[in-house]
Length: 615
Image 1 (cartoon, rainbow, N blue to C red):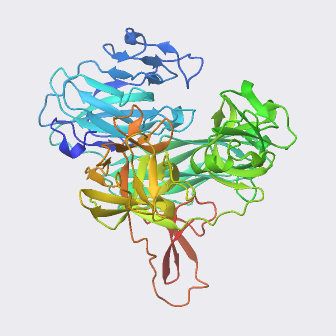
Image 2 (cartoon, rainbow, N blue to C red):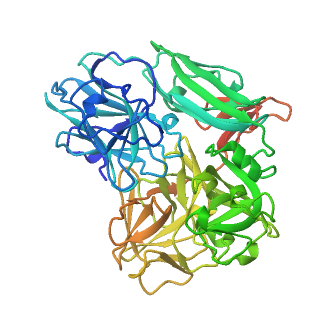
Image 3 (tube, rainbow, N blue to C red):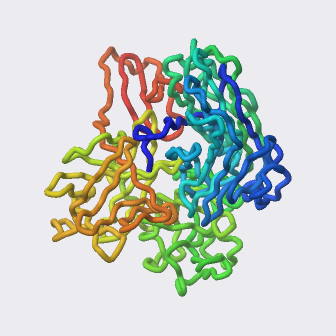
């Protein structure tokens, strides 16, 4: 993977930017794919553009490989083949000017969150941070920016970073030129759309909006219009706006579709930044919380909204590859990869069941192959309301509570920051950036001696990543490298035969020494000295493994090191009756209580006392 700081070509760093104010610059090339229209399924377009792109672009001369016309955008790549698009010739030869490539992009659900940008035969730049959450894909599009240089007849290619699981969508490609002496206008990078999906009547959903301001001359003003939408933030100080986040709340009071608009103004912007807000509401029985989970009926009503929520039902069976092969009311022929839940333990119709994808520790504890006694038990599950087996389902389950089982205490929270070096004795998290979620490696279950390393989701705010004790691995220097120990005090080691990890409380005879090479962007190559295998996150199976070769779906982990995580406490007069103020770690005030705020770390100020808390 190319590091921005080590590029030998003239391509510079790729910076995440989303919609925003205008710049004092010339537009050399622009394509909005407005001629791509009329497709049957905008989220899975099937009209191939290869060899005839002039029919789908406003400017002639574009070419593509495995490109498909979407609805006002385009998709590139298939499930097993990479895709790419190449611009017509563009003049990038002025050595005194600044040239910028901008485009909006998102990844297919579960696909790689990186793209490659190449000018002519220069070294590619890898652009990171694409959202790869579930469809609809249009709201997932975010704008990226890459500074480039070239010749008078340069061509720019945007391509999949991997062949398998490399599908991506593109829109609004633009190449601009800022001449020497020109100054950039004030600018705010922000999402163009915030989509809440389906939310129950009288329930509340919260989305975080992240903005990045540059060259601002004054504070920003934030306002919201539209029934059902509110924002606790009304202004953002100029200095804080360089990297700020705040919550937008959707609280529908009646069944229907809702539309609104969030407007960011001031700061010297020539044009206001407008973010479209959308959501819809239906009557449901639950609230999606652990205390009042959604029912199986609610899952059907919410229709794969993509929201993460608690769901309750009865375990009634599993499906071997398809729902046509579902077995209900029996563990005969059960499979471990999934289970079916229903509103009643007596359910016999698969059409009334919700399939649940199982992985990691959740699979170990709940699957009917290894746990036949779980059949007909009530269970609460925390996961994403996403299609599974092409019907309403539950995927990416990370937490559960099973009937008759005492819930385990929540692991203690641990804060991490991106590592810049490896220090013996420190604790580190292995992290895969999934675009919309940070996935942290978790320790192999205490009852097991080997296995793949699965993940739990962490939350990152203001460069601080919040995980828990199971995500902390201790690196200790030894002859030839480092040992790696999980939070249960067990050494990780690798063997020649399998890609799984083994764990041992005693120092193993071999395979437990790891060489660690940390790149400047935080990516780590963690190699077993004895076997030559190195740690990769598999985007298909959603786990970490040690492979002897580069996996088609393999991604190197990022390393984050444990920070002190200590609370910040001020001493003052009795503050028990003073008003409460809640701020993000970036210093943006978001309200007077934690109610309605997304999970994360916040700073609470009351009188002369300041403390950091995690919601």
